[in-house]
Image (cartoon, rainbow, N blue to C red; front, side, top):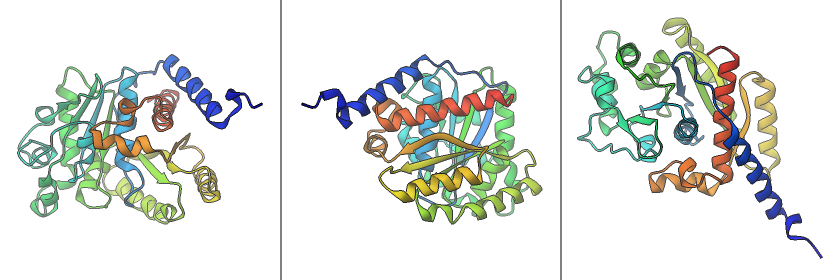
Length: 295
């Protein structure tokens, strides 16, 4: 007779319990200075926004102050953090156009203490045309962030900038403002096709706009352990980028997909689910790696 604790489901539940127990015991280091990440990949559908909001929420759940800047006109990061972002709301659009300071448009997320967001609105779709002849148009977000960090009494430990899935002016503003790039890579063949092109664009921005920008983190997403292809993608990425690829891998999971429909992150929607546990472990890796490198 098979014991209940020998079934695959029982073993999975036991493993999840052990992982969440270890997570609960971890205390994360505060960075020396605010770490500014842009979460970017010009390919859509790789888990970019999902990664932004869930890594941010995971860090906030461990007691850190985290600010998410939603630079994608679709406003999906704002939705997941339960932040209003209709057309009448002041957003990053007003900041980029010089009509508001960053601190004036920050909203508190109801998801977790210490989690904040500057929303996106549909007005961001017109930024490229409106700023076509503007002076230092690539530096607008960088200037706004620096002013905010110099004047605020409570600087965040982390800033995450969620970019649209394109390499236009909004993404260039994010890359100019950030110190680190976090690239989510989907565990599918087509996800690999744009990696080399992405690296070329990063190098171009380093040379012309932001010499301090570095690809510091790669996170593998939408992993399906039932397929050989997923394993091959993981092996290829880790072999190609051994020093920046996280050990944590984000699985394909129902809870991750459904959380935004409740205006929530998976961290608060179902903290003990496999997807939430994976994002919590990824956030712990990011914080600890930064501490090891003196960030």
